[in-house]
Length: 202
Image (cartoon, rainbow, N blue to C red; front, side, top):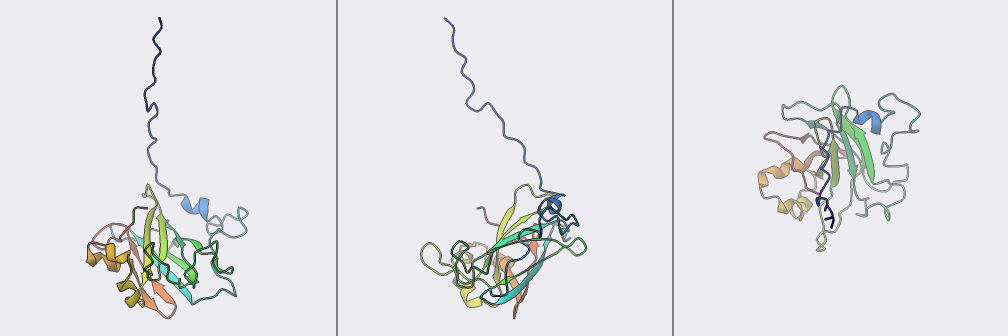
């Protein structure tokens, strides 16, 4: 009698993770890198049109490493609700709800031209403060990092935001708040160090 050989339950090993750079700009924003012909325009470069409803804003910032230096090959993607607090699929048709921006190779600054988002309901019905969801990838980051950007001039809404309320170390809440107003905001994302941004495991 031949005894069948039972294969091990998990015969394959997980492949090691790899960083996304240093070529992430070339693959995702070829026009920015001077490589024409892949896309007419880089995907995510334009979020608003002439007839988009809502307050137009400019959001810019840098991704800062643990040594305090801006990453000049970072890539930032954002997604957000429209001015009525509705995400794409049902959102206002002149607004994409999603954008992608590479860091400038000289300054490390990323920039988005968008609108201030409306307030979105939390699952329990409470309204969240206006915010933008952010995903960051760059050389040295194995898995993209997720965070949020809130607005300094929305202090009352921020005080009642159910996500901000869950942050245990209250001194870290400011790492999610963009400075500015009147349509212009700036926000640096710190990967490490005493000013490390709050990142979300989603």
